[in-house]
Amino acid sequence: MPVKINLDGLGVIVTASSRGIGFNVARELLKRNARVVISSQNEENLKRALETLSEYGEVHAVRANLFDQRDLEKLVKEGWELLGSIDALVWNAPNVRCEPCLLHEATYIDWIEASALHTVAPGYLTTLLVQAWLERKRKGTVIYLNSVSIKEPMPPLVLADVTRAGLVQLAKSVSRTYGKHGIRAYSVLLGSFDTPGARENLRRVAEARGEPFEETWEREVLGRTPLHRTGRWEELGSLVAFLLSEEAEYMLGSTAIIDGAMTRGIDI
Image (tube, rainbow, N blue to C red; front, side, top):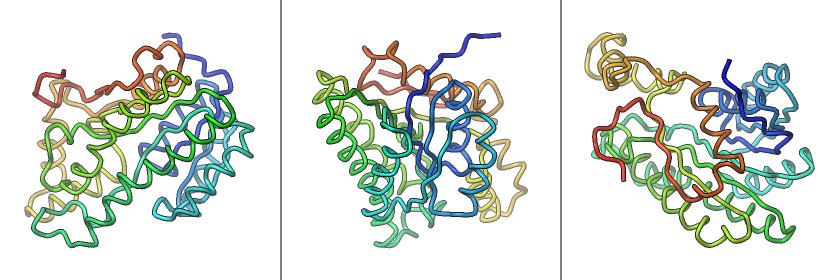
């Protein structure tokens, strides 16, 4: 059995974590002895996730709408109260509601929503946490779960691809400015993972093309990597845990890619 990194009670907020990527990352961190606050704006999903994740360790739930400034502030305030301290944020975001949609189909409001979700919300949460860490003279880590599609754009995800590309710069800026205070940030570019959201998106693409879902899944997901599979949660959990650990300190500001060689360009 491989040795897992022991996060030894690290207090972590994971956003958009009632299902899919956020939920599975939260579970993997709990398995590595982190203490976790999960969040979602859907109370029923959040309640179910809390019940399931409670089997793995100390977990709390805070209802938060990532589009609402007050909810973002509440998430930090209540997260600090529940955990005693917030040591890290793992940023995850739900899909933009219009996606999958092509550029010519996007409205002004769609662009506003994408910007709020993938730029404003993570940026403001980072501001709140950096302020708190500096005030309390504490170290802190932020991990932005991102997508390899910012390197090789996927046309039906154009809004997300454009607006979340800035998270790479945000991670670098946070690390360069506040690294001397023990505050570091990373961007993780994910390839394909089998989630309800991924399947919902691909199902809509398949319907628009008039082809069977499994055929679309085979070509657009499994066929893009030589491994011919999606990522495993254990793999993503190990990467996130490593970045949260002190062993990754000198990597501050880095962009990590976990995509099974899906992208074809040279990583520099």
